[in-house]
Image 1 (cartoon, one colour):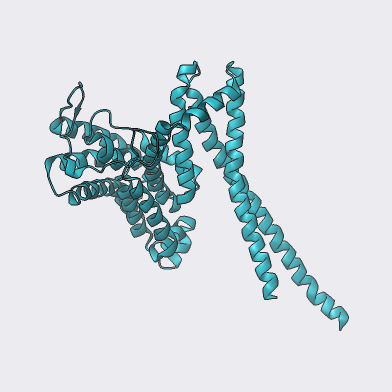
Image 2: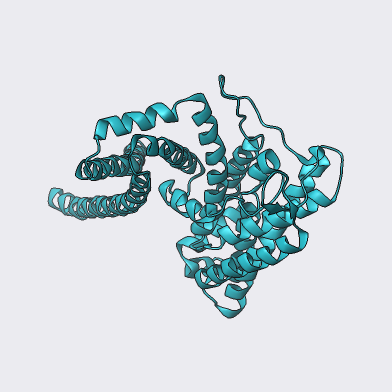
Length: 379
């Protein structure tokens, strides 16, 4: 009896795993088909375009750019995913990371510390600012029931205005340009890049290992701790979580604080590894990119890593299309179709698993009902 139960359980786990794996693969293939149709309709060669993108994306310089972009995308998606796991939509990651990077850059440029402590201070300041800004939305939801979607969108706008004001107060001219930015961070606060790709003069962000550590911490926090269990339970069913003794309002605040703290890390690879200053051209929009990648990766740190690499590859490969007189917007179309296809695929996979589970339960109930009848007939 035990062996039969174990076999059925393993069978269901394998089925669920195959369905979960097939969903994103089919979605990406479908996006490729749609993109091919669009290319054909616009008079562009399909195979030549895709081959050009792959060839350009596999060059050493492009590989470095892909890894650097994927590092920031990964951190952004993790910040979003933590909220998603609790059914919270932290749309304000974009404002949180930009404000955090600005304040951290100003602090980093104003102080001088020994090398190990200077970048640590900058990173801690960024995390505290991001957590504090996201915490506003968490407190509003916990105490006043304000939707975090509305509050974080509004906080994005406020962060943009506040950031512009603070930058004007702290800015100095950037040498060799008409740009302005915070005072440059001294060498003791910079994190040197790494030569991970042979043949490229560019270096991979040194904080790529920080992104890996955050991903591991994300998994450990959500899957091996009581806090992670409470967070996931609240996301599945708030009523059930309350019944089991979880303080949902406190969990909302904690989740937003942690999500904001992770958002504060998004700008650190670029700030400490490339620009060393927050200026007007500091990369925007990473928060919204993180939403798409979190959906693509199913809020799983491993899935998000693959999604970030795919997204970065498409972004970098788009740079070569203009030279071949192909609109780079074809990549934007492909990214949008991928996200839409993945969402639909996961929903269909969820429904398939639900129907399969219902049929299994029906068969077991029917078998249990027929067993007493057979025993009675035998007696």
